[in-house]
Image (cartoon, rainbow over all chains, first blue to last red; front, top):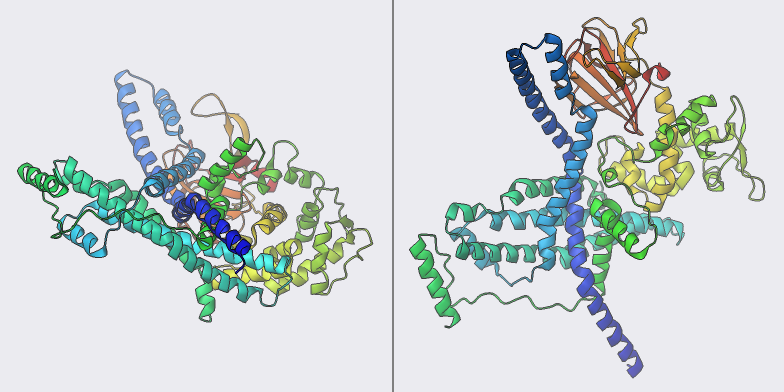
Length: 267
Length: 373
């Protein structure tokens, strides 16, 4: 090969490698964020039901308190009704709807911070499967289980949604610019499958390995620093109670949209 | 001290504390750090695809784009963060807001101009960007891209050199042909904007994903290319918001009168002036209450003030709320058709007597329900 061509290829490979060092961790972060969002997109409905239930309890308690207090002070029925109504109507239906969506947004941002941000900065160690399994059997902690599982589900959901976006984009581009409509669907489907495999292999595997390493490092640090076993083993409850269910929900959301596999098998 | 001696000391201290010892496999050292990989073009591709999906679909991506636009000093338009959360059957935020507006929103304008709320008139009005649309037969100037679909459905389009004006009848004919093709008017209107191929593909994908109603815009929108979604959203959402709002029926028999109308009023309990966001209809307890038009039940619950309530989402930014019911069989997520039973009126919640409190909201803003009686 000519020397100049070898030089050019070498320079571009180094540039790509340097760029990859900055971009790939962002890609890992992005896959997890997309997967978490697929889950939180449906969370606002559940949050509304929860807020409504809390509102009913608070309103009932407020009515009892107002009646008791104003009863002692010999308040009139009208005063009691007015104050009770004002308290009960303080958080109305519209406010609960707005609050449920804001809470869903807050849950998403906190989940991203708990799940994706630590992986972004963590320097992973090469823990083997046998080591991880052994540690899990001898010293099971919530973090060792919930963390990697949440990353796995969020990563899987994110991979499917990224592949769907690629499929739609490729099809649109082929139809509009390449004027290649007849085979655009098959081509887009093929590219989507390749994209899913690529994202899972190059980004998903990194995410899961980092999460296993992070969980292991934290569990071992807690073992050295914390004296109470119960406290040490229950660390990571937020991830187990909030982030993991959101990630699982995200995968359920993403799977029905995975029409490529269905189409491949005649669906 | 060597590493082994430190680890042995740690084990002894853990044993003294009484905590479990994490045993290591014999001869095992702390695992090595994963070496820095040499990233290639495939890694960059995968990361770029993931970041693109994050920017388009997630609020975190929206925040990053906003931060970038602040940094660069360039205005890059992003959706409000809340708009990334789509409740079932809800439209994309934005287009319906143009219809409600304060003052001359598009819907108010449509009513003022007497736009016939049939599909043809509505789509012509929205596509013509709110131009004066007279009653009866008329000519309308449309974007030239709309005419691209006409030949495919056997309707004559204006010549490329001729003005982009078409008789309303021809536009209706094209939409009718497209409705026959897709079995759904929303897909038909979307096809006039973005073309048949993109909508064929998107509806096909929605069917493959087992969507309940693949021809509904909300079902296939995700499978349109992003730039096409931006083009189709205002036309489809605007058109069907006009059609939906005008198809709404009164929830109870018309013989019952409105005891407390929409607007500022003297509140009977609070004894001060306050905005009344709906209309109170004086109905005896047990009167059947019907859905104003087809939609999906968003919430069915109760609270201390509204009593038993049902909120129905009709799509395109339009929702209705029915309060103070005595009973309801509506379940969240259930589909209601035009005129289906929502529940029976009552006096649940904070009320002075049995009545139905009925609200219509356009993109979250309450409007006077009596306008759509």
